[in-house]
Image 1 (cartoon, rainbow, N blue to C red):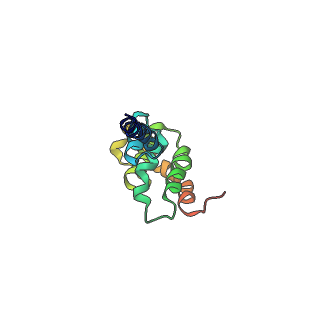
Image 2: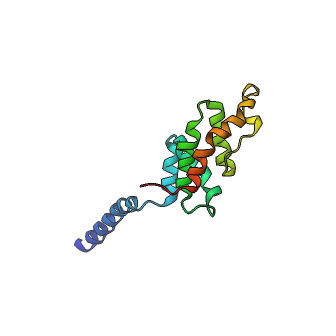
Image 3: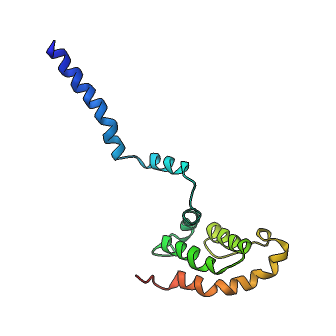
Length: 131
């Protein structure tokens, strides 16, 4: 009788301990699935969309994308123009605004907006990050 119980107990303990061990080493797909349940952070989503355009151009594409979001786009007070610039960067990898992305009344502000973000954009792309 003991010979039957012992293997059953070993098998049961193995089965019960395996999920706990598997949870400590979650596969990437499971972690991504969990992140779907959380509302994505706007900055993280922007960087995620921006990085593929920056890979190959810059040594640290995440840093460039984060800098563009935090410094270049942050200088734009108007929310419609800011969203248009962020959309342009995340879709193309360069600051751009399609005229269809902004209301008719703000289309004249596109040029001055680019003038305003020129220096921070160049700093994000070409000046080394300071630690």
